[in-house]
Amino acid sequence: MREHHKGVNSGLCPKCLFIKRLTRHHLFPVRHFGDGPRSPILHLCRECHDDIEKLIPYIKLSPREYMRIARDFLVGED
Image 1 (spheres, one colour):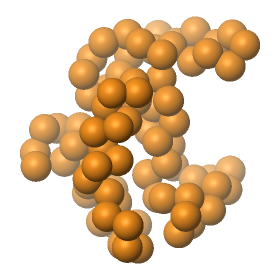
Image 2: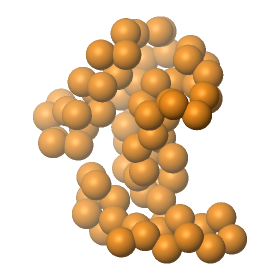
Image 3: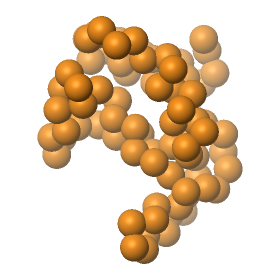
Image 4: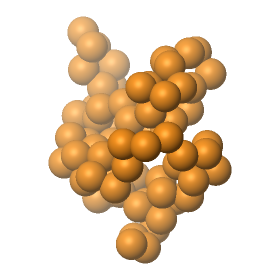
């Protein structure tokens, strides 16, 4: 369930399961991989987006490692 109007993207956050305004989290950091049209995106509310960003190291990891971080974050494993 998602509404799109004037740049506002509301929907169900897959982490906290609340319907909120969603932000775009790039699974592969833009600083290392750029922001191409095939860049995988995870839509999260601002609070959950801030939480996953705390888990992302500044150094470059393999795409597989970024996917593991996102998976563990969503299922609640730390």
